[in-house]
Length: 333
Ligand code: PBG
Image (cartoon, rainbow, N blue to C red):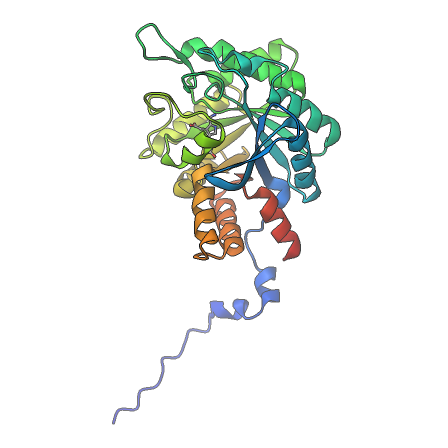
């Protein structure tokens, strides 16, 4: 009989640092801080409105007064910002309600800045929620998209948000030149202090499905592949980010998040001096929610693990529908 001794492990034993929660916490490389979380809110007209979105349980369309309450709860939990999306009462071909100072997003911005000044208010600047055809730009005479022609309306929307008191505007249409146009427009109107959180690297993704229910912004025909990025491209992400920086972007966003962690890392490394955001989008939320509801995943652990991964990949700011839950879970931990 051969006497088999177990191999002697190397003296360098990583497991020593995993033996207690205390030491694990001590040597943890990546930490979550609710101050870097942003909670998206869907805002519509009215008062006392709180309509749950079918494909995003736990997320609501809110009237401005309810948006203030939600922002208040977020601020109390330490969440750093809210990102406002508007659902207008009237839509037209030009998305003219987007630049209406009386619209729901502008009302909610004023009210939140007034009542919850400690939370950053970021507003989404796009026309797809405001156009009757659901596209981010205009439709040209040939029936195709005329995105360039819609730049002035994007600028008008951003200026209207700035007038309402937004800290940052977030152009999300991925139209070439939109960041530069908005920067010029803001500066010309006396809003040189308002920053631009650019959706610099936004992919034409299937994971926006639930959002389009939430914001009622599904395109009536066609898709967004002619202006949002091809999911297969990473080098092009660097090009997009560089263009937005040239045009005056203050923060860069990568979107979606989980399927694009390699892109987050590459943007982080290519632009070390810039804050980077990662948007954990509606479909990513819906997947976790659906599995958790069926008892297939431990929601709290899966969500915190996901958010930690985004930070580990290099994101500074995390935009997530889980912002408030995650902030509360962290406080309990
Ligand atoms: C466009 C916009 C979209 C999202 C944020 N801004 C939808 C789109 O490009 O079709 C998606 C966000 C999400 O899925 O959570 N205004």
